[in-house]
Length: 95
Image (cartoon, rainbow, N blue to C red; front, side, top):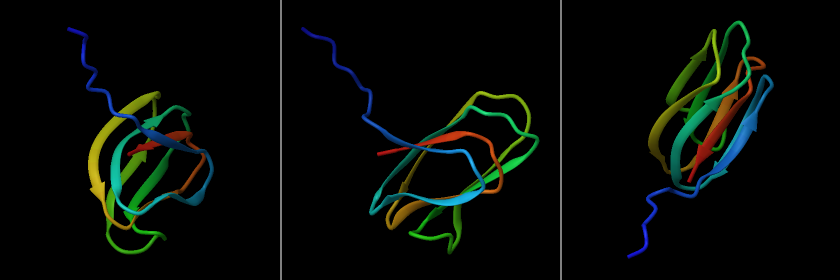
């Protein structure tokens, strides 16, 4: 019997500047973030929205050593919007 893989197919968007990024429109799953570029301090604010409005579903503060992978598995309904306050490089993975 062949082995069955339980890996999910994820898409990702890389953010590496102070900006607001609409990562995905519509419902989905915020799976993880991979932070790969160090800076002194940076904050990523993640919204279930098409713009940076409403209550954040996650606030991620980066400070110090990288790389680091953070798993979330948070469902969203409207869209996945990320606001970055600095220049840390990070990949936001979603389904």
